[in-house]
Image (cartoon, rainbow, N blue to C red; front, side, top):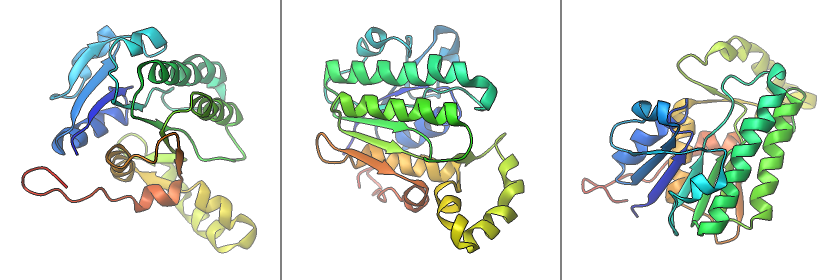
Length: 227
């Protein structure tokens, strides 16, 4: 089923990979970006100038029945960026949830973070508060909870692969190693496409953890572009 999708954070790490995948599967994609970033919106998407931190700005480009994919976030999160997590990550999620509630979107897709975790507490707190905002808005939503997404310019955690291997073998650390496992950019895009194409029941919040993200496989398309 072809869907009308609005992507916020369209010119970021995930957005630039997701939008071409959605377009290739026949979905109609609109991309919200700051005016200076409009030239970076992937070809084929309708580029719309707006402020992803402002609910009214988001609502002005939303339509009833849309799928809203919220990808706004602080690039390269680190403990020293705690203030940005509140000012950007949490504020944008709350604004998007408010806009989605006002307009009546069909499905809200949000990229959160694996929880709980022993590090990055400010980042986790902002993302957990964003998830609560979706619940409070009573939205039909899918929340993806990766820990780190490997891809171009984002490969340093591969150095930790041996430690992950050991942690998965030890009972005290096994669950944490699985919950905080690494996923690839391709796996994230597949999981996001699957989420867009297969929404949960109305007024349900669906959680996709690392294991679910790794296992996600969008339906194969026929030559005509339909599942």
